[in-house]
View 1 (spheres, rainbow, N blue to C red):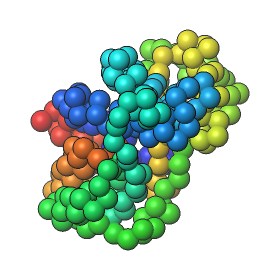
View 2: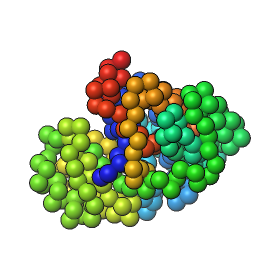
View 3: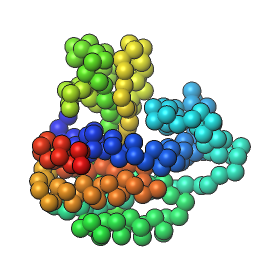
Length: 250
């Protein structure tokens, strides 16, 4: 799985998420609202909604909060209307950055995201400037003590996955979006524990950063992740393990 950014799976990011769980619930609720509005409130017939609900449950979102979000999406309860936007830009060191946005005010969000880039040594780019560097892929993270590599390889590849590899003391399974649900179902049927699952963007090639440049990019990524309208941030950088361990433990 060439070019997978550290930012997608490091403990550094997990620590940020844990600190901001209330904000995370708000972001996941938006995801559910948009999915329900587009495809209806039945997760059995709406794959995007099922995916959003699964993410919410893995993050310990209360069931009543999930139900309210679904009803807002279907119109049973009054709620906001969100637009999906992809912002593209560059960070320190020339790294490419993608921000997946759900916003109820495009102009406000565009100004705020542009300012975050500028304040952290980057710049917001034009549509299409970096998106071509990334490919949408399904990604599952499996704890190492949950299954043997051989069993996981057999299960995942038979279900249509394209790659299985050992990463950060666990395993990652990668697949194309069209077989994401089939791979998820196969893992669930085999009772393989899944730490996280998502359809994300993965860079074909990466830039390794060190020292102050790495620290600057990580501060930008953290600031973008913290924005209420940002659902996901993806980049094409990697950072040496020793530096990442230092930053994760700060």
